[in-house]
Image 1: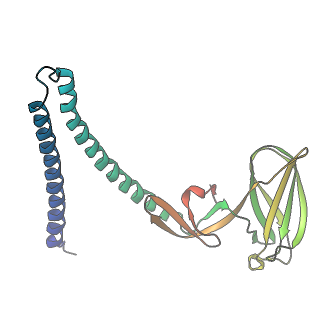
Image 2: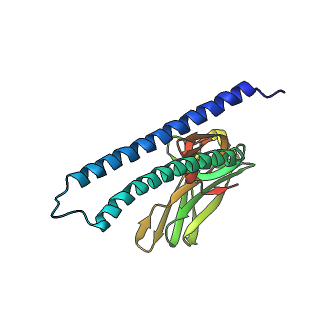
Image 3: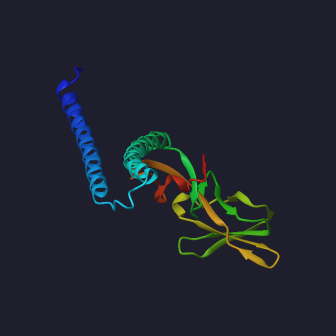
Length: 217
């Protein structure tokens, strides 16, 4: 397919115009600064003239402002490139499973799976399988576990993912009880960006930021 040089020229023209505007703004800022500096010198007290250090400091300010403006432009450009790279990397996740915060029980081939994260060691961990209405379907213990992420298997002969089962995990260390962070497996259906944030559109959890992903499956 032939390249549309008209489109390329329009794009280049727009870029050049933006650059010219930026340059004009910078030149205007320098001009205003120098006029203010000259006015200050003309109206200074002859008995207390501005010393060389102060004069040098004020002249250096304009270079500082120019440097900050250029730095801001560079950061904005890098931020845009980073977002594009995130989107490209995120596209590779479509169709894959990820582990994110949530309490939906994932059931496949007669086994329900879920996970959780403990902030500290626990000497007793208990899992409750819940119906969609919140009623307890089954309860079982996992014993003592250390801090970090853990998973569990729940055998079933009748339940499927369409059953809508969820789970709850409680932990205790002596008399101190804690509520672990619940984790679930979910399927990535799409990837979107909002500003500088990469979001995953998940099958069960909806839209969640990529930063919420705990692990990839």
